[in-house]
Length: 90
Image (cartoon, rainbow, N blue to C red; front, side, top):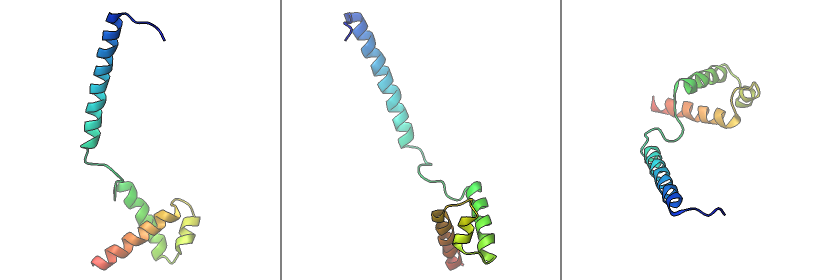
């Protein structure tokens, strides 16, 4: 380890304190953000969902839709659950 003079040590402490203040501010900003987590139903989600629903209403099974690519099996089940939920709310 390199030996430091008192002045170098004080400068290093000041640098570290500035860095801590910056990180604390960033941490606070992230903690208070309103958009944490998965974004539901944005434009890309709705476009993918609508494509899924056209295929599903056209008579394709979930696995046929998944095999075509574009969405995962988990996403297909999420879309189906959302579809069932919207039907029950009507």
